[in-house]
Length: 424
Image 1: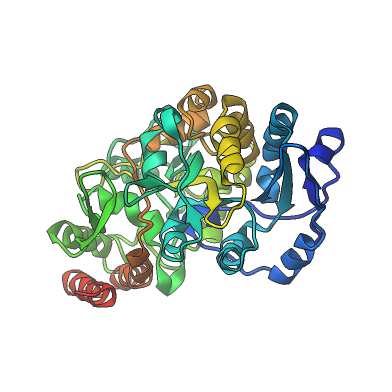
Image 2 (image 1 turned 90 degrees about the vertical axis):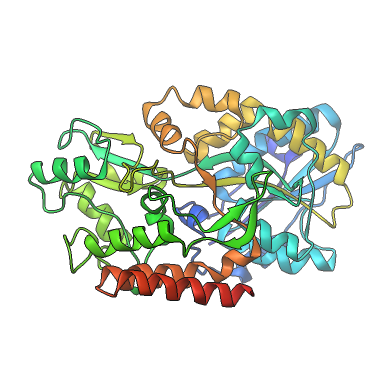
């Protein structure tokens, strides 16, 4: 693995980048994998100093986004004289390195990142608000809300990602409107599984199951008037208990549709090989499905309400220790927010743009349009610090219920455990 650092001025002549990185579902689910931070540190030492008459800023970016950001940086340099140093990083290393380096006065002026980092980044005081100004209304409301904390926006959003129901149109020609319709269509297809949804063994996968939970009207935390999450825990309410009963009814003591042994790899392989006509997944799965004829639909409702997934938002944070905050804000708001830049970032990762005008163009692709429709009404994944106490008991409880544990009492115990962990 090798990483190379470039400056935008150099990039305008030739992009001499050889590196490796990753782009995976871990960006939405925070299911990061370990990788070498030592290599990242070594790469940073190679940074080439550059400074034009307009000063310079440094941007951390991963391999997936480097070319798109380099193009915007070149335009920024040409028009303002400010040079941009792009430091290539493994996406999985960025949050940890940013948290470690910014308090020491090191680190970049800007870094790419996911919105669910926001609680940790603000709690550690390493990010500064981004002044979107009039451009705020040019973005999807969900995208701006995702990066909003205590009334301030902390990043320039560029992409929204969410789950949808991916359908093999040769096995299931029509989109199901409800859970029952989907299971009936899956059984009629005569495949090994009528439907597959991934779990992670005894740890469960509450992110992937969340659309089904939402269809019962069950959430995690209540919301404030401005749409942000409060710390009032609501997951243990009657709606949550009804969802728990649904898990039990379709687990090993019921229909058997849910199985903790169906991991990500098993689920993707089952769909890719025609063993199931339906899978809940995101755009990061599509490359695994080869030449299958697929469509993307909203996840069907199991509980009567809309089965909205969490929305994950990608963006660019501004460092709280930036010595060039005005230049960095200018690059974010006036260059990375352009339609061309947002479309370039979309083409790099297949995630629908956060900028409305760019999203309209991207929606000309029916698969992208399907994911956008599946995410309509989605809530940003909670990024408040208290969310860190939720994931583990939530997932383990879902897995236990699917394995036959009493649904209501297990759900109530989970809620009590979470409440105790967050205080109160």
